[in-house]
Amino acid sequence: MSAAPHQTAVSPRSEILRVENLQTEFHTSAGVVRAVRDVSFSVFPGETLGIVGESGCGKSVTMASILRLLPDTGRVVGGSVFFNGADISKYNDVRMEAIRGNLVGMIFQDPMTSLNPVYSVGEQLIEHLVKHKGITRKAARVKAVDMLAMVGIDNPSERLKSFPHQFSGGMRQRVMVAIALITDPLLLIADEPTTALDVTIQAQILELMKRLKAELETAAILITHDLGVVADTCDRVLVMYGGKIVEQGRVGDIFYRPQHPYTQGLLGSVPNPKAPVRERLVPIPGQPPDLLSPPKGCPFVPRCRYAMAVCSDHMPDSYPVADGHKSACWLQHPRAPRADRAAAGVTR
Ligand SMILES: Nc1ncnc2c1ncn2[C@@H]1O[C@H](COP(=O)(O)OP(=O)(O)OP(=O)(O)O)[C@@H](O)[C@H]1O
Ligand SMILES: [Mg+2]
Image (tube, rainbow, N blue to C red; front, top):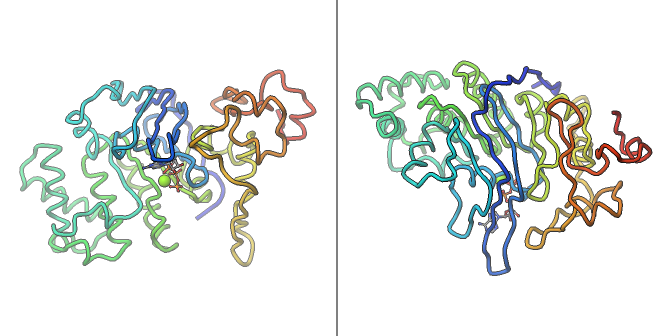
């Protein structure tokens, strides 16, 4: 897998998904966890949007909030979600059911929890199609065989009869890709789809997703801890920290011209692909913020070497630094002193 970011022009066509000021909370015995704090972003047709950030920064909860798959303790307390032009934040469960797994395909980390162990893989693919597309079982079976072949499963008509435990981990994840894409979704959401797999199989699954996504012209959101995967797969990137988006831009902007000190720290921890022995990720010193009582200013302050007085008191807006590239850091404020910008490695 190459580490050089691949560049695809992001089309100005209207968004598939637009999230505005999303806020999600969990009510726990320890208090209210503010997991997603005013998150806004868009996904455009055909593009792959990567979401990166340390564990606990709110990536999965953002997706669960969009799809309304939160546990009982979680609640979306603000914001709107527009999908394919409609405000789905107002949809009831029945209408959301028609979107999830149908117009939005989903792939999660562990296929064993997503596949039902008591039904054959074929039964699950066929039922899924009959439920969402209203086609006959016979037509669904034909499509299921085609889809299994597309995801690289040999002898697909025989393998339809197999149960999930009769597949290897990598093959199960191929089945999950098949289920996610068989309804021709407008958007694919993949939350760490390969973390549970070994490195070779990970590369195969990502290559498969990339190929099918291009063939089917599906837009995708890919959550991953692997910056090499982001460089290889994504068009644009959101960087999350402490329940907020701190930087977003095209993959080249984020990798070559990172503006937010947190992004700069994250990139400093990319293993060197040319090193003879793969280096361990170097963590950024310090702890992420406690989302039970998030700071009123920038959540990165305690770990930021450029922190100024204003940073603790006020959360900065997201300032444009280039076309489509924004950073929520006071250093990028248009009137920020040049000396600070230079110190932070800000080049424009
Ligand atoms: N059911 C829950 N109850 C209370 N807090 C929760 C719950 N689920 C998530 N959180 C909190 O919400 C925040 C965001 O969690 P989330 O799962 O979105 O993180 P993430 O970015 O996906 O991390 P990871 O990379 O580890 O998957 C975390 O602080 C987490 O502790
Ligand atoms: Mg997660």
